Image (tube, rainbow, N blue to C red; front, side, top):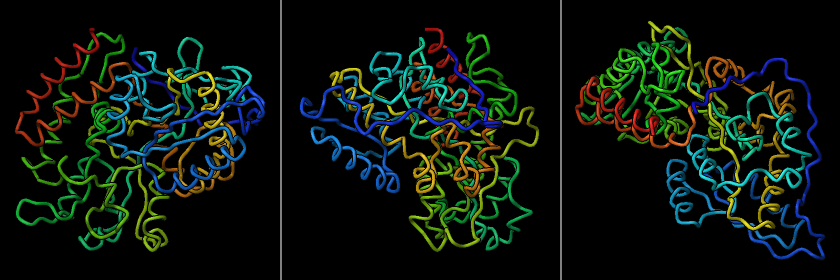
Length: 434
């Protein structure tokens, strides 16, 4: 089933969630048996500092519990999790982006929330503690299967100093359209031969569902038709976007490529490698942690996601959630303990927001002064209102790979946009037709 929901942030009422437990296990401490929780998550130094403390506190309150944490590169973790689950191994609990995680829920690899252990009366009470639609992607047959570590959407981070060095006005020349983005990047880019040494902007090439699909929607196309029978809808829109990407890459203006280090990984150093990148609100905390001088300067800003000059629809980058889930192969005691641990960590949502700039979209947090006063939060809120949640379905990971093949084809292999479109449509049509 196609999954597209609208997020409503306006008129959020204050909600006080159910009391969260330091321990959700059913045994008393004298009866409690030793339990080991294997927790897999993606790397984030700022978040790790908090979570290590929360886990330590949880284990101190529950001395029969041992929590082992493994952290992975965010771009590799989905494949690592899939391989482990396919081999009937893997962690007790983990988190992934919903479009990578959804298939595991549908395949029975994930246990639904243990509401009592998580501190809620039932599924209804849990759902009502979050902003509208936030748990829709993990709610199936009236059961909730995950709790959001973070809700993420992307805007554009800009190094104003690099604009000035390229002779651009860091106010009037900020890109509002994708055409602007190309023209600005032409003025900023530097090369040594054909190798780019300084980029203006570059795309997040692993995340086509989040990044490329909205560009297609701006021009009137769709990933899947409303009746869910046709894939890759709107040939002109798809060919135009693939043509834009071809022109962006080595076969065109040579402004960027999937072969280069991700722009967001270089932005924080402010060393002149990249002037703009797509990233989430969490990038603010990472700038502060990695480059205090840059963070404290007036040399960077955040601006809305661009749209095409001839866009027929105003769509921003898709937002997505990373949801904590529990392996259905866990024992009853592991399951109860894992949900209690998840609930304990998520009871610190304001600290997550202050220290890591990630949003756990409970009604309580979204109505808090901490949330309202966060720098650039308004840019992200307005962009989220322009967009929708990323496509998620049992075959989302395969569709993501097919999109990657199409983009790499036009950018790196000289495939024509028309040929890439035809192959993409054929491939994704098979996925949705079963």
